[in-house]
Length: 276
Image (tube, rainbow, N blue to C red; front, side, top):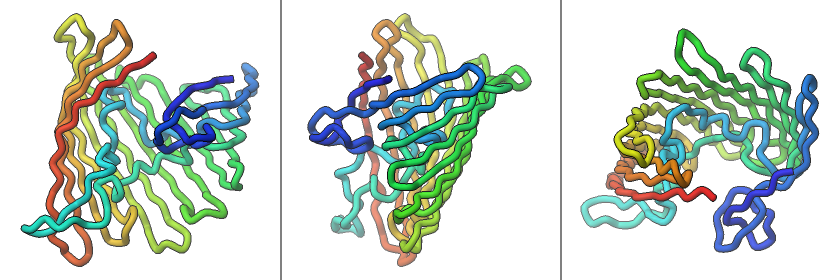
């Protein structure tokens, strides 16, 4: 079993949202056989969870693929800055599989760097995912792909693929592409991103990572809306305590079919990650 904690709901059964109380994030039992794989049952990651976030870089906890921490900051329009009814975090989505949920999940053993997983959710949805990790031509390489069918919900079918490569010099690259066809919503969501990371040893604190990222989201919450996000920043690892600090500059732009004059959102974010 594996018990972990995050800010969940009062009942402790909210796997993906943030509130003001502690709740149980993972709570499951599993059985593993060396040649037959692993079966898990309970509240934990679906087979596709994490597939769009495959990375060999060191800025993954900071760079959030457009779905930023600007959940309470709304776009404004025109010279007078009239507020719209939606926030900067409403238009993008990482489309990262079926997330954490009540699930029965199966993982195959690793074969030549590949693993395959599938899961069935309590609401009838299901997904399948494949992952790879290994070396190709002296480069570290990892990738993942998934397909999910959210039966009985409005999310419809979604899919995605991601990949990352890293060189011994400290340079790493990653990219992903995904889509979703919502049932009864009229939305045909597409998202993609590319990013680069350079790691250097500049102090005894730990490695320092300089990163850039571009992310585009189309048709996520509103038909015809397109949001672009650009990040540049630095992450300082604090290896002795397993933590990190980061400083990120972000620009968020929004377009819609009516050519509304949305003002860009510029953000400067300082973050700390404490692991314990």
